[in-house]
Image 1 (cartoon, chains in turn red, cyan):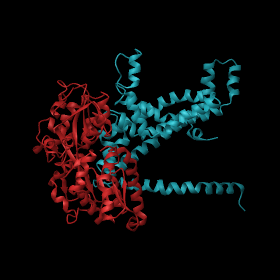
Image 2 (cartoon, rainbow over the protein chains, first blue to last red):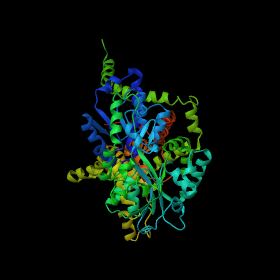
Image 3 (cartoon, rainbow over the protein chains, first blue to last red):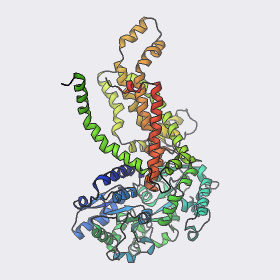
Image 4 (cartoon, chains in turn green, red):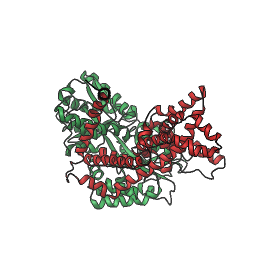
Length: 358
Length: 281
């Protein structure tokens, strides 16, 4: 998520809520307006958007003989506002995976039409849901500064990450509860199989575990650009980091080490806003992104990996080092449940913020 | 027959109409919708306001935001005042260069400037290397990820908003008044305290109000340069809007912030003439 800088989208999203709901009042349905615009795909921007354009959207333009507009940045609040105002401007959206389930529950997404998206049957079931499909994969990994911990001397698990006695140095973690619930539970010795479903007791346990490491967390990062920068400069000894950002920095020979162990794997989810005038085309393009051919294109670009295992298996040994779906890497990792993340993010975010401010 | 006064009022109304109409449609109407939205929580119309006013988290964040804004405003004015005074003494090319020096940062995205501060202020960054190298500090200081870092970043962004009104005010000060004070035997300090400072207070008040209002709504700088406890109301509202999709609660938080600002302005206007401060001559 190179530019998952939420704040960039915030002003827009907030304005969209106020603006869109204002428009909805006097004018009523505005669907006709949307029909005149080209098919629009919206994503996070940066390297992810560039990758999706090259691997999925440009080929789709030729395949279906249509014009695709690539927009950014994405925000689930904007989708909700557009749908409620009946002024849907995006037809296919790459959005945080939680939105698949929040959008299903709050009724602002179209159900995926699996008659058209037939290629989804080749994917691992965990990537396929009623209201969204993951089309590429990334992970939140443990990384460290090479001077603080030379070679593979860095934390090899979240337990190690919490162990500031044996592995001293300032830490960095993501600002929101996302990924941190999983990291804290792994650090507390809870297995992946016992982590979900989230209960009030488990949320409490995770936040209490977080309070343990909090005095050593110097940075609660918000933008994907921060961890590689802070690790390279030595400001932090160890930090959680998005894989796409990490590999981008490693291309520039950043002095950073990382491990797949205890990695938290996730995907880039595509959804279709309810009421889009291009619904069928959205489903067709989604289907075309899941072909072996389209998924294999991701290997050459080297930012986020394919979600399709048969494509991941074609990786050269060099490419495989950076692939989430590569069996040798995947076996060390857990898979984040965006459905459960949606639960803890809405129910326990307030307790999380209290822990941060205490 | 229209009297002259009536005609003047009519002309004023006609001249104001486009702006008033524009604001009514793009600002007041959405604001009204947002206000309505803030009363639509499932738990009852006033539950959102009760949640925020009664919750430890929200009151703490409001207090944080207020303290940060007051601190940043004070530093910005203290730094901006002498700068504005220097500007009044410059002429020609040096004045042009200095004015561009003040204005130029406004043309660079706040996001980029904030990232630049991370590079400058980090543990092994140029500022720390300079301070340690010159023997001023024994070990690198932790500027970042605390309210210190946030204050540095915010003061930088907000300085032009303080300097420009103060500078405009200072230009209007009649130099003969200072000479008269001097001629009547006042010390330079007394001239400053009893003549120059009171005459430039409207500019200071205008700058302070501008900076304070902008500081209350800051988002990017505290999000990137702040630590765990540098959470501002704007950051909280962002989470409510984007992450929790709790729009009624976000609406209530926005209106409470707006209410707090109006109360503060009302209180401030008892001490400084805000009307005069914002007057442009």
